[in-house]
Image (cartoon, rainbow, N blue to C red; front, side, top):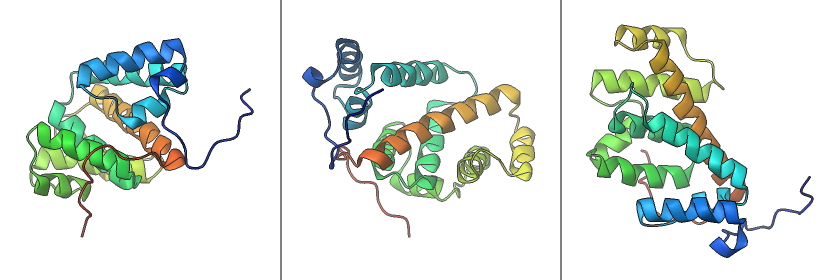
Length: 186
């Protein structure tokens, strides 16, 4: 058991401050995306947590039920529910890179996007995240009526879980945000 006290503010580790296993994983992240986000580096304090998160993220990204844009929408609305400034900044940038406008990212965060199918996904994700995993039954019905079935629900729950983990990492560390700040909701 680690008995080291958490420092305040929480320090983002360098590659030299993490285990060799974590360093290898973080170098792969840096090579793949062209930067090493502070959040990933911080998760690297635990090679197991980092590997688990990266493996889960990779598996979900190869799922067959949601497009890259839909996945970013899920990430945005869950991060909004959890009030995670870091993940809102990162996923707003990623959503824009996938083709969303800034106004659309704001509408997603409010669960009020004009596209009915996307809004069905977003509203269900919002409900699950806001209600500690228990979705509104009407939103589950709407999800099924929109053409989504059991596999899609499992992937949706996976994305919500993954994003909640990163939201909680930020909530408990307050690390510096290294993406452009997401606009506030009005």
